[in-house]
Image 1: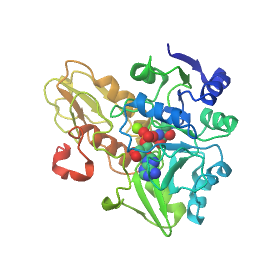
Image 2: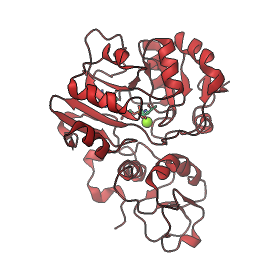
Image 3: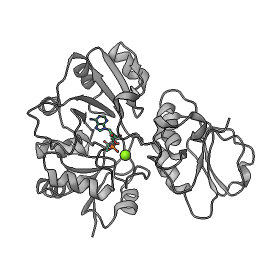
Length: 333
Ligand code: TXA
Ligand code: MG
């Protein structure tokens, strides 16, 4: 049986469960995470098992403060500057792993780096009390849409985990931005809740695209956020039997004939759209539709991360984005 407990009352129960190597779904400001003690190999293995995630895909390690982060990874000046500016918050830093880190090697799946993030709210309190980092990927079956509410976690993973901590809808709604820090260079491995512009402004240098030859972003399978129904992006004309993922004040042609419509933000606010994205995809992904048609969303600010997630949801299943020509990704011109 999966218990759901409100965050205000869940700290002791979550702590007891995680301390003995259990796994719990916990809220973070981005999406819900499937958390286990990062220093406990059995707990980490259990996370992979519950998610059905390929083992080569490493997990993000969540910490409660900079001191804890510094015990596990090497921070250069640039990394420290970014952590001070954006933590706690939706930024994950990929840094060289320290040789004496107690984080279980399964977390970084054999990579010499560690992905670290300091979340806000319940997660931070929990980690501070536990005194050890929590490994936590998004709380969804591998390949499915990330959960942004306790109910979404229950629908996907109910029965497979003991505890879901409920703090209501995730305020950011889209996963953290992942940045790899190297001496004198920053690489954007995944766009997310903090925009590239915000990071570049603090860093005083550009965010570079990941080097495809380095396999820097091992988890970036193109169909990572897949609804069951096929998805088309940039749609200006809705096809018969499609559900419509709308954005902004003006509708695509044929919108009246859509089987269902959800507008991510009638005012065209990208922050609001990010918050609602995953719940909207889940809601539209219903039996009897021929597919999901997504209206164009501007590729600026948080729109970059939203388009990235839609591109993955639209992609043919199980193919790596880096291996695909743009034309195969499902854009409608
Ligand atoms: O907002 C978030 O980041 C959420 C919440 C729960 O914190 N977590 C999340 O985790 O999205 P996950 O596991 O679904 O995605 C983590 C991504 C994966 O694509 C993984 O490959 C990448 O981070 N990653 C983890 N460790 C890495 C490393 N050492 N180098 C490069 N990429 C890494
Ligand atoms: Mg995920």
